[in-house]
Image (cartoon, rainbow, N blue to C red; front, side, top):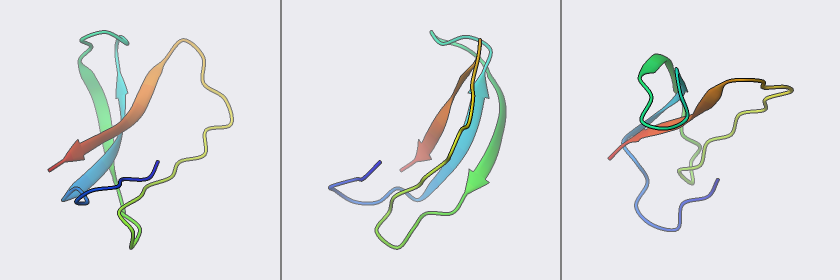
Length: 56
């Protein structure tokens, strides 16, 4: 993911209990690259909701 505007203050890799309005079950901080991007390789994901959360 590439951000074309101001980089966020922080980012975290999170999992939720549901893909719609779910509750965050866990979050791990991730380092922002110099250009403000983050990357995560996910070899497989089934019956789960996961992604990045941002703090601006």
